[in-house]
Amino acid sequence: MTTKLSEGAKTVPNSVCDVVVIGAGPAGLLAAGRAAMLGARVLLLEKMEKPARKLRITGKGRANITNMRPLEAHLQEIHPEPRFLRQAFQAFFNRHLIALLEKYGVETKTERGDRVFPASDRAWDVAEALVDWAKAHGVEIVRHAKVESLVTHEGAFTGLVFTRTHLGPQTIEARCGIIATGGQSYPATGSTGDGFRFAEATGHRIEALRPSLVGIETRPVHESAQGLTVKNVQLTLWLDGKKHCSEFGEAEFTAKGLGGPIVLRLSRKIVDAMAAGRKVEVTLDLKPALDPPKLEARLLREFDAHTCDTCRNLLRALLPTQLVEVFSDALGLDPAGPSEQVKGLKRKKLLNLLKELRFEVTGHGSWEEAIVTAGGVSLKDIDPRTMASKKIDNLYFAGEVIDLDANTGGYNLQIAFSTGWLAGESAARRAVGLTSGVLS
Ligand SMILES: Cc1cc2nc3c(=O)[nH]c(=O)nc-3n(C[C@H](O)[C@H](O)[C@H](O)COP(=O)(O)OP(=O)(O)OC[C@H]3O[C@@H](n4cnc5c(N)ncnc54)[C@H](O)[C@@H]3O)c2cc1C
Image (tube, rainbow, N blue to C red; front, side, top):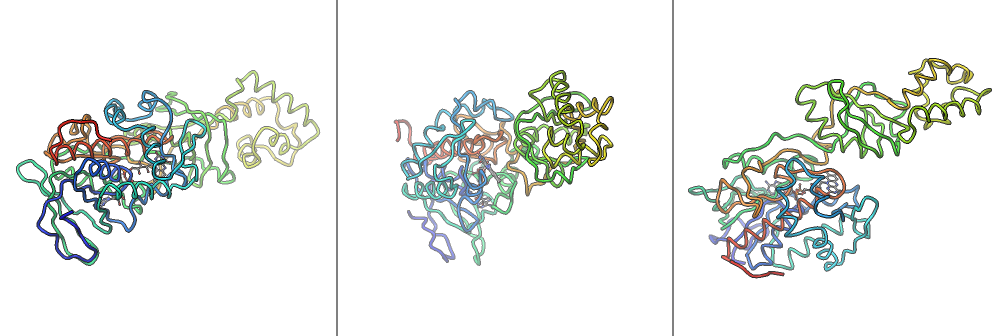
């Protein structure tokens, strides 16, 4: 490749590469590899030491890479405009990803909720396989290369300016550019929102950026329960005093409030409601399988079984130990005192608390803690058939930089892989003038 950038090179030879991709995350790797597969000379610029830093920590280090649910079910998990992804998913979906990874030595397995993981449980293996795949197709990956700005001429992308460690700004010309810089959550991984600035500077609209899939801060915070995970519970979101929606599954009591899968799933709505100045509350139903009459019957059985016992032991029969103090305080009980205390109104109150442990939501986690960025480059400015910008010729977008995000379950990575593939394919066709033909 004529644009070869050896480590320590001070200048970039005055030659033009076909496709330059900014950011070697999952979207950038797929975009670069696919473009190279189609014969384009591809340069992939990554500002960090290692490509795909974020991918390597996904799924608690296990990488929930995709989900085996059918396309229509995938779309239901995506915001704000799922239909935007139809073509990208048709071009490259879960089965394509699995086949690609298997070819590069990564076997996969499907777990509860149709979530797909590498069989090794190592996100690292997925990242290395994608790097190997891109390189095998001839992609040149340049590390420590931080793109500073795009160069455009008469409404078309023509190149970019980047810096490398100890070197001043360098300009590179390219026929097409792909912005795959990710969002701005977990900035230590390299995703610091640079792509939003490049897009905005070249006339694209940016939909408001918000942290999503993030824990919440509540009043009260139940300190004695910190670290406790409760399974098979139901969390209901209340906006301005009205029931809005519920999620069933697992929640966690944290140092600042609540976290865990069902909280993350509701977090998008919570963050938006708070930004809109609405009163936000959540209630936790610790016994969703029992309606009030059934729970009442269960309570009576437990009272019979604990007649000469302490309150603490009675509550322990109904609750995780770490919640006994929370409930004793709320009901005004002495945990060491007799279980007799829990009668009449207090029993009614206990039943209500088990069904509706209420929290006022006072805040949410920061960018450092959010799994994804909601908002981004407006879908109105991107062609869903190609991922091409509608504002600047020869410029494409892929991955989390786009105003798309999804629930947990492997959907966010699949968005990155699919949009990356389609952007790479479209850019290569544009750059090397491919017109038709089925390409492997
Ligand atoms: C803790 C955590 C766990 C997650 N777990 C899962 C999971 O299990 N399943 C799932 O589906 N999703 C998960 N996600 C979300 C998923 O990781 C992201 O949606 C996905 O990585 C987005 O891919 P991307 O390629 O668009 O961006 P990124 O992965 O953010 O990659 C962007 C790349 O661009 C580089 N870059 C940025 N600016 C520049 C610049 N100016 N010049 C050069 N390079 C630049 C960055 O260094 C980075 O390498 C998780 C996220 C986090 C934070």
